[in-house]
Image (cartoon, rainbow, N blue to C red):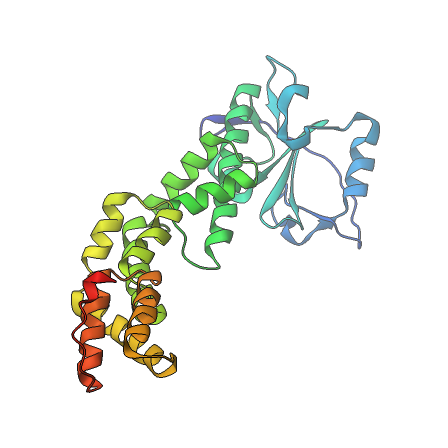
Length: 285
């Protein structure tokens, strides 16, 4: 008798297996079999190695057209983690655990080749999603950085688009928040001015509106304080006459991304604090 599991049908299936102490695969086809371990070699012997047809890279071209394909075994792979090998008699595919659960891929369930093609696409997206999460585990990333990483790994444009959309929905990536955090951190901890920060965010693929929004939240006082701290440290180490020191430190501040106007303001204040009489106009530098 057929049973219904979601939209798929399930047929009764029986089969004997062999236990092995050298475990490469865990057979989870039957209830309570999570603790029963079987080797891939034993599985091949049971099915007949000569009749086993593997869909390499989940290529379903070897699967027959217009036939109902019944799952005859489901096995948990020891590596990579959370991957399952699904057998349809002599045919097989591998899917992620989340995909297997979503499509209720248990022994006896019946699929068509068209349905398996949908599952293979879903599995590719799930693997791309896992790759992106692994990349994000090291530190926050922008959507552009995730896209670049997945392209380097060979994922399709469609998969990349789906993965990024999912990551945004699940709030794993947020370019606006990233830009704001980056701007504040680079200014306070690294002594970088707005021009430098703007360039860095462009390199990270942040859109112009989000960059300007993030920089707009950097206060003038914070930027001034950062530039002043840099100038004070530099003033003590730079040699030469006042005019030479002004030129060198001014150029240094602008290389760090501070504007010429801000650099001039900082240097005038620094000179006044240092008790040095100077009437040169900074704007001429």
